[in-house]
Image (tube, rainbow, N blue to C red; front, top):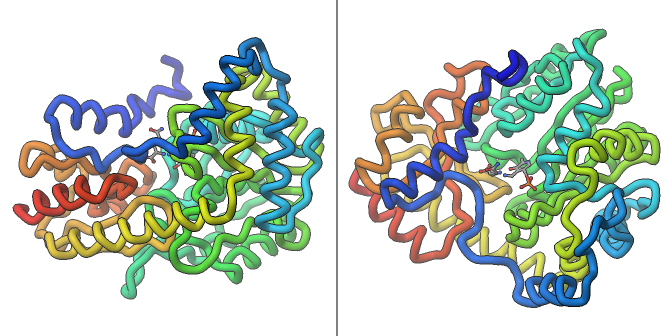
Length: 383
Ligand code: PMP
Ligand code: GLN
């Protein structure tokens, strides 16, 4: 393994899901729903397979039906107009979109600012691109939740900064950046002439406040690559359908990298997700309301179990602080939790360069059926 990748080892998600399997524990670690997405969308995938749509290499940028549906979704939801032919690219999940964006836009030695804790593939993708990651830490506040210090962000920008890698709604903290915070970030990007890659895969999972795409702020459309994924919005994490929207120049750059990573993304699922994106508004509000109730259930249960809960405004994760249980090492806590009570969670420290800052935080996923969450809570109360 080369030096760029050596520090990353096995992803925490694979490690913790394997632990859940081997111990039979309830898996609130890796974020994936335990119920599949809509029946009609699964049927659409089967129809595409049967009709021979997408069984051979689809077009590199994605099938036109899906690119049109992505553009229509951005227009309908946010009033952002993108040309399906030049400003939309289909990728193998958001993971490929992140990697391809960084490989395409970062020169070796460039600094890339990312909010810490950061999703684990960010660090690896920055390293693959030869960039230098510069974390800006979100800090817990006394009212609960994690907050971005805009002065710290401003101070992190140097003459070597090429790109800001943003994530809202934010995994693992559940922070949803406000309109004011995003406006300030946009102003910094414009003033310092930064590119921005913004990972908005949880765009539809916002329970308090609203999701505002960074690309909608003045001066941002031309410098922003926006990423999303059908994995989260439609509960098909195994289909690996993601996408990028942005200016023709930026999308063409990302496409240049994508063509040598996967060449194209799997065909039949693209047709199915094109139909999914056209589902009525009630689908999206239904998903959100269902997950909000699950957030409330798990948040109350974790609080009863003695954990300090940082109530998330979005995503399907809750970050807790284990110091209220008299513990301080999230890694040790998560490694022993399956044996102690039969539940798997993720130590947030893996998402930090500043391991000490992340040590006491542990993430639980709530994209699970209510009886599963209830059983997990009953077990955690034995802590
Ligand atoms: N970004 C974030 C913030 C995520 O949480 C995830 C999935 N867990 C991804 C990207 C990857 O998405 P996909 O499964 O579509 O590759
Ligand atoms: N995004 C999911 C999470 O944060 C997991 C995705 C993965 O396993 N790569 O848990």
